[in-house]
Amino acid sequence: MIHREGKRSIFSALTLLALPYVLMTYFNALAWVITAYLVVAVILFALVVQFFRNPNRSAIAGELELVAPADGKVVIVEQVNEPEYFHGKRMMISIFMSPLNVHVTRSPIKGTVVYAKYHPGKFLVAWHPKSSTMNERTTVVIESTGGPVLFRQIAGAVARRISLYSKPGSVVKAGEEVGFIRFGSRVDIYLPMDAEILAKVGDKPVGGETLIARLKQA
Image (cartoon, rainbow, N blue to C red; front, top):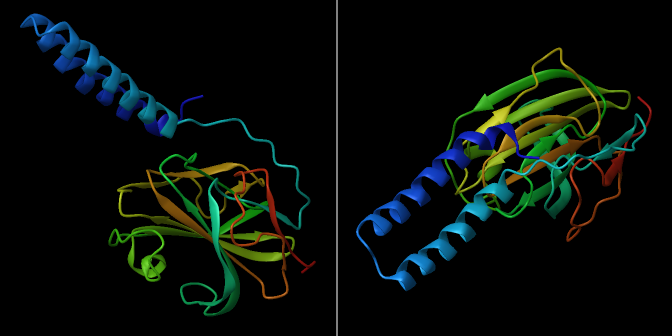
């Protein structure tokens, strides 16, 4: 299934890739030139389509369990200071998404959205230490049975647009689609200090399915 964020991009890519073919055919370009272009065009178009794929996912998680909010690779699991909402120490799990990953963002846990804010910013590479505070990003806090959980969509050097669908008051389920980030990017999850962390650096979780943490009953 193709994500709604990609329909315009896919149409634009198809138009841009088809135009040179039409011109080459009209001006009787050499057959091997046309064939070579078609091969390259098909590959490029396939890459655009696969980027905007939106596979069905089923989250099997209890009310205190968190699923990965995105596909990718766990690059950080550490104690940090969260300055925007909690203003204190939290455990952070950071998942980096390459351009080849599914870029749908999903709710990590069941609960009610109590905070959602968009921040314009720079476009440092997603793994840069300051990308979480300087890049374009959105911050969302979900009040769950185990307490508040914050996740942050962070644009990378290639990404130029973040979409967030949830608003304060929205009731979400674990694994439910809540946003989309274009191209390479990152999602950070901030958890209470006593949370049981199941993810480890190097893991490659599946968004909406892989369990990454378990909270204590609030």
